[in-house]
Length: 139
Image (cartoon, rainbow, N blue to C red; front, side, top):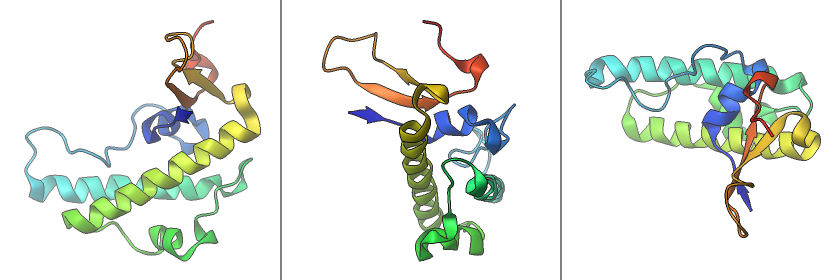
């Protein structure tokens, strides 16, 4: 059993284009008022979704338009209201994690690393983490 986290995919997949800083679509900077943070968070989420749409020609491809619900990620901007935004954030995270599983299935250790295997005896908790060559854990 392995897990994956959206953050590891966002920073580990070069094609997403987040080389320097990941999009702050989850939490606003500490101390920033809601009226300021929600528009920034929504814009970051929309940038992430645009980047995900760019994986359509990758191997494996990510086709956000393949389902009516995920197509809405492209067709509607991120809401500012917390409840609607949380739903969009969760759906985006689910898409990222599902695609990460496909990336692992298709490319294995060529594009990913498994964190946690050597740290623990069986049963080991592990995380599938897409990675760039410079992010690869030694060993």
